[in-house]
Length: 111
Image (cartoon, rainbow, N blue to C red; front, side):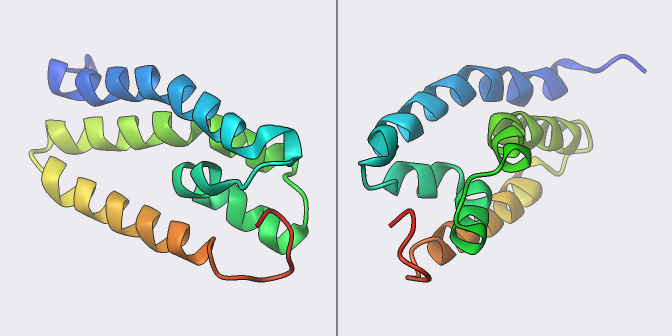
């Protein structure tokens, strides 16, 4: 089935924002000598895994690379079904909750 413009707008925005956010997160990490604040805010699922496993493993790097594209695709589907705001609220709430958890001191790594 052909996707309508409502689908492609969130996907396009996510494709534009993803590399920008990745560069900001990498800059925040400063090659392992930074504070990781932007990485924790922008990519909380990957960073939360790093807190638990003490390393950023390849599957979670892939998750970080795809995270905003997945958000865009989910929001695109929601826009086609006239549920954009509802789904956006759920994504933002989940993202914020996990990002907040990234700031709880666990084992001292990636702090």
